[in-house]
Amino acid sequence: MARRKVRRNYDFLSKYSYYTPGLKGMFTLLCLMLAGTLLGNCVMLVCLSFPGGEQFTAEYGMLLSYPVMFVPAMIYASLKSSSAALFEEGYALDRGRFSPVGALMCCLMAILGTLASSIVADGAVGLLPPMPEWLEQALDSLVKGKLWVNFLCASIMAPIFEEWLCRGMVLRGLLNYRRRDRAGNGVRGLKPSVAIIISAAFFALIHANPWQAIVAFSLGCLFGYVYYRTGSLKLTMLMHFTNNTFALLCSNLPAFEELDSWAQLLGTGRYLVLCAACILMIVVAVRTFSKIALLRPQGNCAILEEQN
Image (spheres, one colour):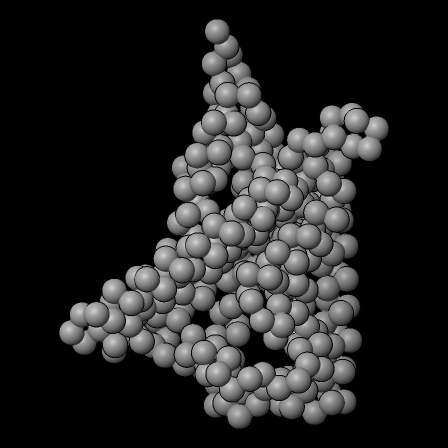
């Protein structure tokens, strides 16, 4: 009997290679993440029950509760992948394709494109009504506490877990899941542009408020396009790290303490000039990634090799 042999990238990622969730699977993962959020809140309540728990929870609670949010979805995806490995093709979550641009240039364009998208999206956020005070205080608590704790949560754990979910599982799944078209023929995945937009909307939805969702959707479209072209989850993790670290540093600078937007800091005229430069940078980044040839119409998520 032929035996499937898989060349792995990371053990953490390879266990999910055979699960390619479609739209139904995407909503299942969303529900499991909500269940994980409740589980994380239970962890916080347990911490509060111990002597000195209130201070410990305020300072370090996110280090425990944040990764717990993803545990149910990760267990479910791992089990689904294990069962699907017997009869489904596997698609690597991370297998970078950078030629002819090169890995270093891809990293540079990814970083600059991310910063530019964040600055442009900030202008759209400024059109929304003021953020409720309770939400502003909750978000401030994520960036104004112990810097090393915030860095671990926002700059290390968030890029790993959220990119695993939003690009590695949702976008890769939407690009490659088995479905039937209108003619009844078996096909793989949604149209790439549709898959990228849906995965970006999913990324926005898990941020649970419109002030963050606008930025998340904008960045999600860029992250999704980069993943579609390169198949590299490490690269989108770098982009996520860049955005979150940039936001974390800005939130801790004295110049931003009383300001809510770049327009307030720079003035409307200079901000518009900066936006124009950022839009040009985004165009350059997208054109750079468009030079990477596609292995398949569904993008460069590598199909795992099957050997005897």
